[in-house]
Length: 313
Image (cartoon, rainbow, N blue to C red; front, side, top):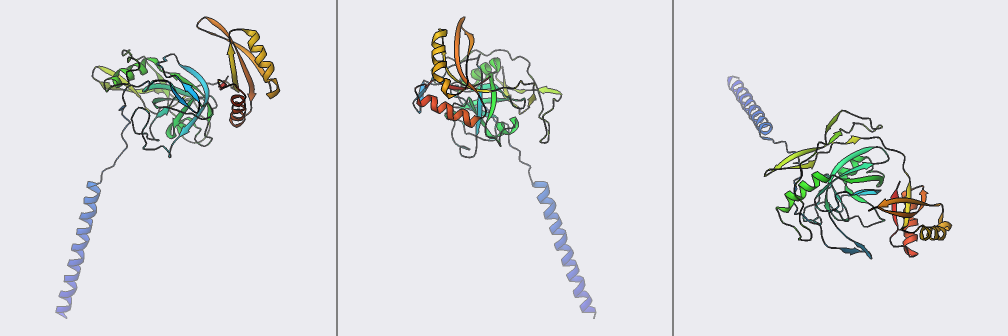
């Protein structure tokens, strides 16, 4: 009997030892586990503008345009391009706040405003595109999520270059080399930019207290901005989709084109001033949907109007 009790005590001691060892192992695992968070994207590509190039029989002419301010249809690209090389040599990450543009310098900072819900976000241009259906910009998947159009795939947007911030980015990136097509701009002091955080939930966006749009990243003695993901909620007016078929210095030429296109639907002529010259542009619309605009645009291009493009007014 005494031997049996001794045997039970031995088993209990062994069990306790194993339990304590397991606890120690668990504690060790907890203590040594590291929480890994994704680092903010760094600007790694060189300054690049590039030579004129042709895609699908359309010529594009990249240039440093720090007054760029356009409206149009935005799209986004993600899984099929994730981890592939961008046009300026970076590795594309669909979760970074980047975008592709057909002509703006790389890198550039632009503010993209969704004209359908008022959400506005700063992203960095590091790729070329999009080359389908005359889209004005191709955002990363994360950018589309924050602007609220990931599910729809497209949105009516306004794209505005942030001049001073883009010049600073270009000055920093040029230290890593460039394409020699255009000299990098001189760094300019950054002005104060305000934005608002994106509200949580899936309801309508509501204005929130203002917070900085971009952080400042020290590079030598240059303070280089970078996107932070802060989303401003700004007032936007209702907008319509049009197809701009052409722009003319002479009004009678615009009238002739308008007459020619009248069979496709409602048309109009609007005036605008560029470089102190008055132009007359012929537009078809308003158009009810992006899909219908794509169809009409292709019809115009096929009928001999390769310069036709989608516009949002």
